Image 1 (cartoon, rainbow, N blue to C red):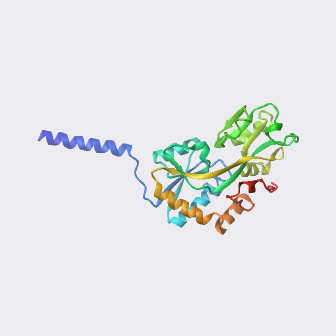
Image 2 (cartoon, one colour; image 1 turned 180 degrees about the vertical axis):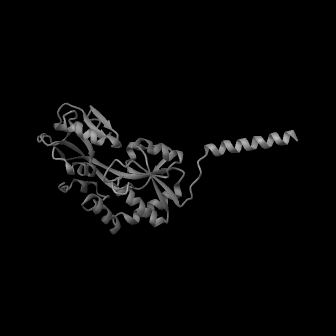
Image 3 (cartoon, rainbow, N blue to C red; image 1 turned 30 degrees about the vertical axis):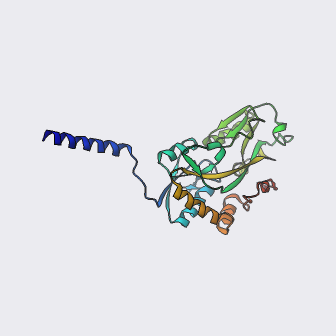
Length: 266
């Protein structure tokens, strides 16, 4: 009898131990989407509702509708998104993510959904600077998540800012602490709408694609996401969303040189 009681208690203890460490699994049709809402117009917090908003969030919503998924948005700092994904806290990372800067063995990426150009943000007074080759001595700020490989040979003195610190980076650029800031064009255009002391350099620093990230084991959901993405990109709903969030028509994802066309005035 004692042996039976002891075994029962041991099984109960093990069961409690497992339940305290394992995360409850979500239904397949409920998708937790992680994002850092400090990167407008791709993701931000709506000032009226307090909800997560932006191009990435609305595009995920369209993908979810196509797959009959429910989705919940989870706001996290950018550097915590992939660890949360691999732990199972979230199912998709939708946060202006590039493959080259974030590759991991247990993470897979969707097909590209956005073609982005990197640009220099400068002070208005630095009118003679037309590219990296004209940069004076001084640190160049880089927004976290930007793929630095294409710049490392040209810029040695860089200072990386987390996405929540972008306003501080702009202030340090304005006061001369930074010589320039590297960011993607839509972000720069959005942030400079209310500033007259900073400008966007017309020269592109190259192109990158934004993708969604998922766990390697989640191959079925990835396939369904890519199928929905293929149906959306280039279609009317995608074009409408792009126009709404960026104020100009989408570029051709298959033709990187299309990024070098004249950008809209801010």
